[in-house]
Length: 106
Figure 1: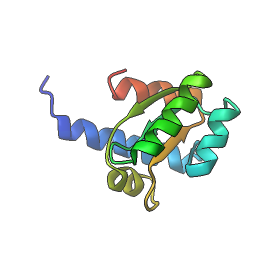
Figure 2 (figure 1 turned 135 degrees about the vertical axis):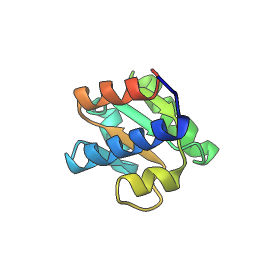
Figure 3 (figure 1 turned 30 degrees about the vertical axis):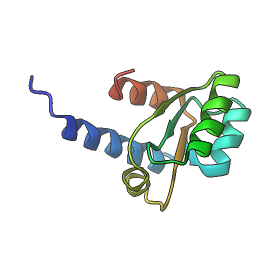
Figure 4 (figure 1 turned 90 degrees about the vertical axis):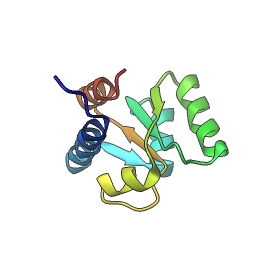
């Protein structure tokens, strides 16, 4: 089996779009609330988010024991879910979160 990193990224972005259509992800301040309420099962923080945003969300995820990964560019993530300027995405469904972590290699 050939490994193509770009096709894997596209697969992940398409999967994020599916999760969005299923209404099982939230972004921005709603993501923060989902982390604090432990509704979030997995969080993606954009690689190009500010250091402050990365720290704020990674600290919250650690404190509330929510898995997270810093991955992708905000433009890609935003486009995948049909939004603009999204730095943080929280998946609020255990099954989707598990499959997404698997796709991300975790």
